[in-house]
Figure 1: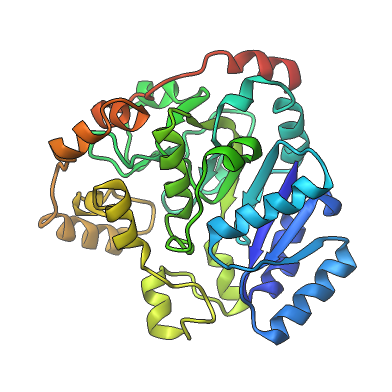
Figure 2: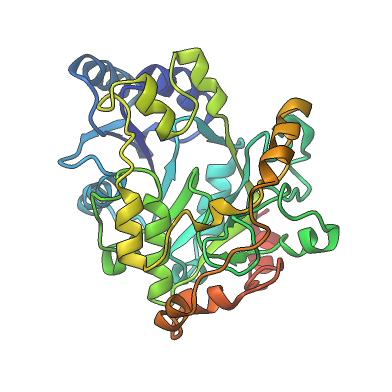
Length: 347
């Protein structure tokens, strides 16, 4: 299993955070430079040479194209079945890589397109030091792009019922996995995914997830493998923590990827507005009293429910997209109970 980390003018963080927090074998890491300045490019090459990491400069810089070109490189070297993509400001818990290699070493998982992790991301979840990694904690389990449940994310800030949370302690089907850390089925990506530069970064994996669903291929989340997202670490490297819209205000748009053209492309391609659930009332998260008061006030003008129109439902009535649109509760859409045999065997 190879690891893909895509870098763009952030090599100090790659060196000081990513490589120190993750215990991946260096020979399996592929660093793809997606448009750094010449100075940063040279610095990145030196780091990779020193650490024994493969350094690639792709022809295109959109995230989907980066994945495609990385897979083409892997195909020339060996027969890996899975590619692990991980943000530079994220990490997996110690020994996760070895556990994943063991658990995925069977034909059962070959049926899935994307496999996601139980993601820890404060303030949407509690902090990692408050979690017992040997017990199930209901973190961010996936994105609700389609389901008629008035959620945008399946997580502890949106689902409060303890019994429902417990039901997520399984290998569960989701519309789209959390895109901080993702396992990509290399064979299925080659066979079913059409890449586009119209999704440079934001929603690039959501689009891939939709393409798999459109082919009746499930995307799932592993409940007992944690991925930690720590964007606040960027402050230590003088990098923006906030969204692409904020990047546009403070930074040269060519320095960090802040291209928002995916909005129109998504609507043209999938027949609905990717942002339609942004109209919902915002959940309260763990970020302090003043911000919670602001959220309460803001919610007065937000909607309690939204839904996709009948034209969209009818368009997708014969595949998993349509079935997810009909899903209207907070329980997992589908549970793959077979997963238990693999956790008992290897963990």
